[in-house]
Amino acid sequence: MRFLIQRVTQASVTIEGSIVGKIDKGYMVLIGVADSDTEEIADKMIRKMLGLRIFEDENGKTNISLADVNGGLLLVSQFTLYADCKKGNRPSFIKAGKPDMAQKLYEYIVARCREQVEKVETGSFGADMKVELLNDGPFTILLDSEELA
Image 1 (cartoon, rainbow, N blue to C red):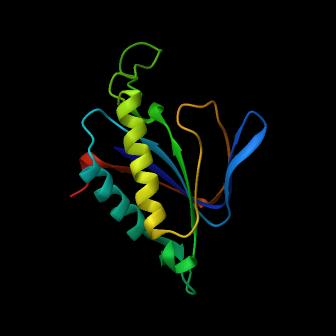
Image 2 (cartoon, helix red, strand yellow):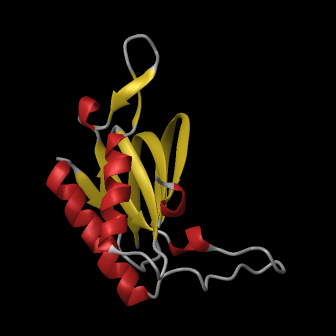
C-alpha cells in the first residue's frame, strides 16, 4: 500500500464540473492499493499517517500533528502509484490491486479515518477526477507499507 501525503492549505476534487470533496488545512492523500494489501496493513498505514508531525510549531519546527492543527483529510484513490516503468515507455499497472478488492480497502481506509478525524473528504473510486491543491511547503511524503517497520 502506498500513501502519497501532501501537506496542504487547501485541496479539492472535482468530477464532471462539480466539487465532490474539499478541505482547507490538512493532508491530500493519494492512496494506491496492491493485491497483497490487507486491512491490517491499512491500519498500520493510517496509524503512521495520522501520527506524522509535519506541521510547524511556534518555532518553525515540524513538530505538530494533523490532530493538533484540527486538519482535514482529502483521500483519493490512485492506482497509478503502482505504475511499473522499468520496461519501455508505457507504464504497466499489474502490481495495482484488482478494482473490487482495492475499492473495498479504499472504503475501509476512509471509514477508519472518519473514526479519528473530524473532516474527511474523498474523491470517487475509479472516476475521472480533477484534483487541485495548494501544497504547503511544499511538503510531500511517500509512505510505502513495504518500508514501514
